[in-house]
Amino acid sequence: MQNTSEIEELVKLISKLPGLGPKSAKRIVLKLINNRDELVKPLAKTLAEVYKNISRCKICGVLKSSTIECSYDNCKVIQRKYSQICVVENIADQWSIENSNIFKGYFHILGGTISSVGHKKEDLLINSLIERVKKDKIEEIILATSATVEGQTTAFYIQDSLSNMDVKITKLAQGLPVGGEIENLDDGTLLSAFKNRSKINSNSS
Ligand SMILES: [Zn+2]
Image (tube, rainbow, N blue to C red; front, side, top):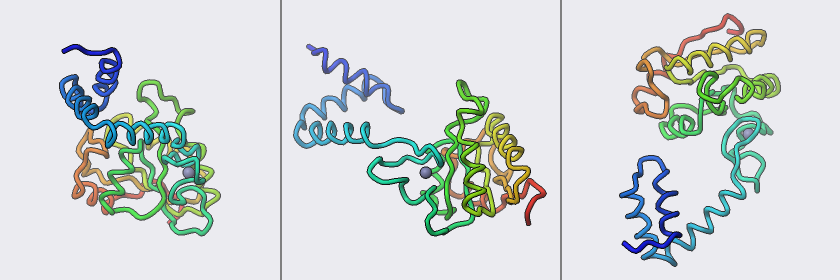
């Protein structure tokens, strides 16, 4: 194969994507090259727009477009719609829970766990969670962190950080498989974990 450096670079970049190795990356690149106008052009445009406009909200952690304040009124509570915040580690977890239609409320994406590599408490959006609880009259915080040591340590730290506040804190049921990451759970397991969540603090009712 007489590769040009541009193609090699593209194959290299695409093979970094999850689930793709060099072989499937080459297939994707070929598909792109054979469909320049239908795929390459709109893809390049969309990628540039995503790069320019999409970022994580510094308050609630969801992905938002710079063209609007915070997507789907998650953290700018104008008219109070929900009284619960579901706290998750990352955006993939939020998407799993959203897709399962189990939970209707606000999300708060921490951006990792306390002991995961390179993450310190200060890097996670915990202070802004405390602010949201105060400001938005939140009645329940549902800790939906993974059933891993890191996930549970993080949940415990949040519980401790909210200990002086009048808010009910619940944790997903222990039916979660040990080591289970939220994003990999099937809808049935998620549903029962939500339904059977247990209260873990003594504040509020
Ligand atoms: Zn937000």
